[in-house]
Image (cartoon, rainbow over all chains, first blue to last red; front, top):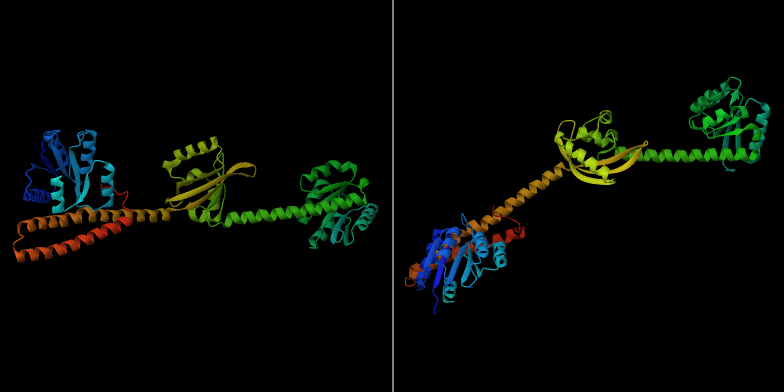
Length: 129
Length: 338
């Protein structure tokens, strides 16, 4: 059974949202893309759309109002949402700060740390997986 | 001792007794000068003349003065020359009493031999030398205490009264020595720290702390507060249990440290801004460029302009990344976002 990819872009930067959506669309992916302006809304959306048969890709920004990326991860881990190993979280930040990169590694649930802007080739390989 | 020149002043009114003593002395000492006084008046004249004596042999009964008053008077006039009292059995009580006043020794006239007279003189002179040395080292310690460039004081462990303060303490705290000695250590502490002081004192009493170090606030006479590093230790002073305290003013040091810490914080803030704020618009520009390139691969002019825009933006991106890396070298590890 072919699983669908459901994409969540959790980021308060409108331009980043726009660029990501457009790029994904241009690459011809038919995945549904949800834009969430902060971690709290992102979490709500994830719980709403969650199904263990589907593959989720989350592009998670670090610095956001209300619930930032780190708080999102904390909540995500405490709710044990990835019991079926069907959610890939990519931490996305304009930061090139080594502290953030190290922290992402240590959290244990981040697939990869991506520095903005995400290269087109990167999108292609993520969507193909 | 036999070869050292000694000068003995014999105060004796009885000529027979004097002759006997003279004989004994001559028998034992090679380099000897004997001065003889037979009454109190001539002793005074002799002592006022400024001539030095190594030791004074003093009869307790002179025709013009006697007893304890005689001893005290000669002692005062002779300024530290050891005195040995010559006495009969009848005055033995006074002789014993005089020992407590600093008299070196007493000899019963009927018992005097060349040997015990010699011994008494040698002991008296040697003991005096030793006391002089002790006095000297006491003076050295007093100077060490007084001229140490850092404030030092002694206080009574029970009453907390200042017992002694050095010159540096007077200069630093602004109180004269007299003022200090009428104060307790409570008076150089800010009022709001007095409770903590009592607590600390009780604690060090209970734990019998010998040495103690810590940071405290002290108040100067001017009312200004200073931050001090304190070292203190137990000691005995004139029979009282006392503590000696060394105080080091570190107010300036702490201010400098605080300034440096604040500057560090600012630097970290700048580094954080570089990483998170400045790179945000650059990443957007680069993202938009990606998108535009995808759409307009056919137009030559546009793709040239875009490529130039990309070159410049990449350049700026590299610069920002370099600055971020540089900043991380000045320890970004503990910086929190808020």
